[in-house]
Length: 266
Image (tube, rainbow, N blue to C red; front, side):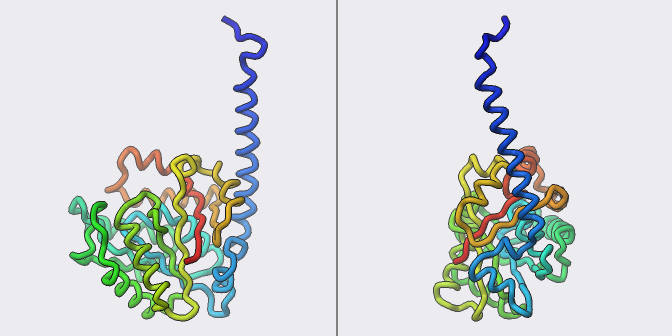
């Protein structure tokens, strides 16, 4: 049966709106990606980036693959602007007894993201197990992070926010430890902490369509990857072959975290 005169109206309108949104998202993506880290950072984060000695950033993650799955836009965005980034991974990801494999995968992934193996550190401590049901000890974790920050003259720390993006207890423990260091003023003077914004499920899986939303909402830092850089981030994620279950392939295609990072200062 043929459609009536108005049968395709809503579908056409929806398709046009989607096309306009996608076109706008792509234009904004090109503008922000071309701007580098300077326009992406605001306030104290921008001040840190403008320092004469440059940005020495430390990405604090919970597991091998966090750096590619969640933070690739930040790592590549900072690297694009000439910042030096290092990774402190606070577990070997040994939940399924794959710790040694995952350490090697982490180094391969970081290499593709522009971070040499010499700047990748894995903490493999029995009291910091890879376990979504375990909250890590704040004092122990804070001590490890602070030691690394001081030893490497770090002036920008990046980690998860209170939602941990996925709600993983280990992710949230990192936020708790950095919040403790920040609130107790234990970090070196001038060292800023940026936390990755956790978004709702809808925004999490609309990929580049979240670009306009991310640009409009308040934040202290925003990193958006070009199409080429997004492929680079996906190649880094492919290094974590031991973790590439079917749902992670879907994640790589649709998650905004493979394209966009919006962050806030503590």
